[in-house]
Amino acid sequence: MSLKHRKALAAESISVKQKAYLNARLRHKRFVQISRVLLLLFFLGLWETAVRQKWIDGFIFSSPSRIFNTFLTMLKDGTIFEHVGATLFETVASFFLVVICGLFFAVLLWCSEKLSEIMEPYLVVLNSLPKSALAPLLIVWLGANRSTIIVAGMSVAIFGTILNLYTGFREVSKDKMKLIYTLGGSRYHVLTKVVLPSTVPATISIMKVNIGLCLVGVVIGEFIGARCGLGYLIIYGSQVFKLDWVLMSIVILCIIAMGLYGLIGVVEKWYQKRI
Amino acid sequence: MEVSDKVSLLECKHVNYSYHTMSGETHALSDVSFQVNDGEFTVIVGPSGCGKSTLLSLICSLNEPESGSILLNGRSLSAHTDFHIGYMPQKDQLFEWRNVYGNITLGLEIQRRLSKENLEFTEKLMREYGLWDFRHVKPSQLSGGMRQRAALIRTLVLRPSLLLLDEPFSALDYQTRLTVSDDIYRIIKREHKTAILVTHDLAEAVSMADTVIVLSNRPATVAAKVPVHFSIEERTPMKSRNAPEFKEYFNMIWKELNTYVPET
Image (cartoon, rainbow over all chains, first blue to last red; front, top):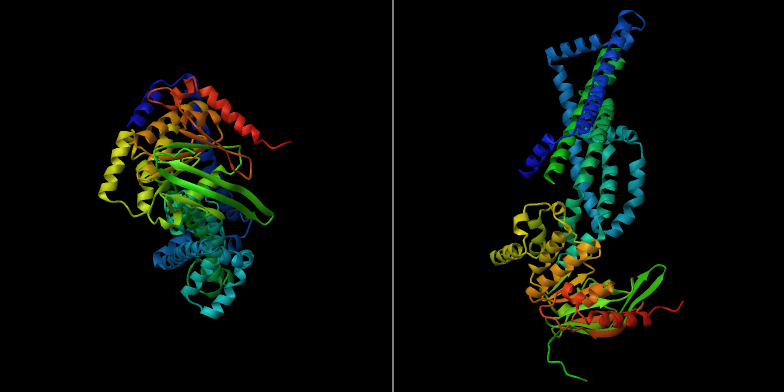
């Protein structure tokens, strides 16, 4: 209440210079936003014109209108829901599994210094390995089914998550840990009262990266061993030269990536506000 | 020697301690012996890095002495199963993800002592020292002085028989430092707590202490014990600073400290 009051006071006693500054900031913000939209419209317009004027071949390059029409057709027969739903479900599932497994293993490493030292080189190697190399193997071992795709999605993010979470856990201040001991706590209390709560912001930003990585893994998995999903649509479309399908899938993947990233951004904002 | 009729609450007997690292061994404490009487305010001073904080972490059982013993009420520390020694760290270490109330009850929560009685005691202390109205507030919204109060009360709600204060004012600017040390001193005296404070600030030591223990350079040993008496009524650190004896004590301890400055 007092904060609101202060803000109201501030609004009344605003000086001319301050007003000018605020207006300049607002203009700047608007300029950036409008430019962003214009750039997109310009690009789409150029693409569409280039195809209509036969500067480029619409059969290979598709065009915004062809992509939109393809989308409408697939919307009418409902197949789009199947593909988008599959990819979305697999991504979200692998994301949550990465969060759970990542936290579990990071805590395990934190609990035992010996274990973490033993495991370190293996985790580093597994993390830097190009995970797309694993996908064909996963298909052979686990079969061409949905759980394989989810594992493929996890494989891209899991090792980095474990390493980054563990590093975050290690960076917790020694003095805060000491405080818990002086209050009569044990290592368990250090974990639950200090390490986990203090690393929530770091955990959220790791998750922000992860959701994108999971999407990458899922699409790679779908390339090789799926009967539906956007990755499947891209591979199948390129094989039968339906490039409208390919480009439409890419556009939808962009939107999904943006949406999922934004969703975690909302969680982050909510947490910051609560703190 | 004279026989004291006061009860000694804490007794350190020939305590030795060394740090071990790959690059070698650092002898931190050498044959440290002293007593702390019930209800007294003891201040340990010594040059920076001499092992003052090490001594405190031994007293609150974070580490064990390599030899010698530390007795609380005549029994060794490990023989005590319940909580007796409260510790106030260098910085307040309040957790930003908990509100003030959550921070103050952290110790009770950890020790599973969130009983009605203890929570009422917490409320009483928080009301008495002006923190109750701030109970839902985040620590970052408190002033430096209030943060120190909160940190002290976080320890007091556990009803420790001995309080350890590890340079609790060193993170504050000079002016706040004076008022906060006055404030903390008053609270400790009002709650009749025995306290050991560690500092490298001589003036602070003299202004607060009933007894000053001077430690030498590393490996630290007790260089002198100076009982401090002021001819003033209702002593506070601020009043002590203006007392006529203040300067004498200051100079005396200054000399004791300098006898142990290493030859260069």
